Length: 75
Image 1: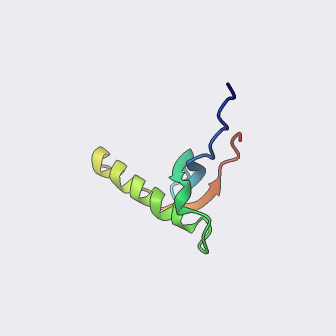
Image 2: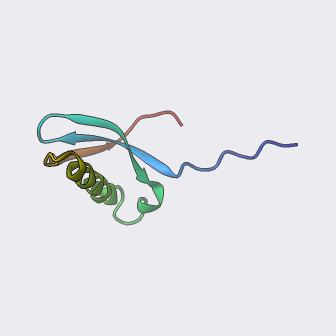
């Protein structure tokens, strides 16, 4: 029996740079949010939402995003 073809990734990975100088790699954003006229800009809102939820749980304020870059991962 033939192997099923590998499905297109459901997520796009981003490296996120913050105003405090920190960097977080391979942040996942649903691929369906990207690729329209806004390009990768919807990724910023998705990651800010993730950061907001993490901050609520940790009790620490979220750092401000300075720059988003697609991760150069495999694939």
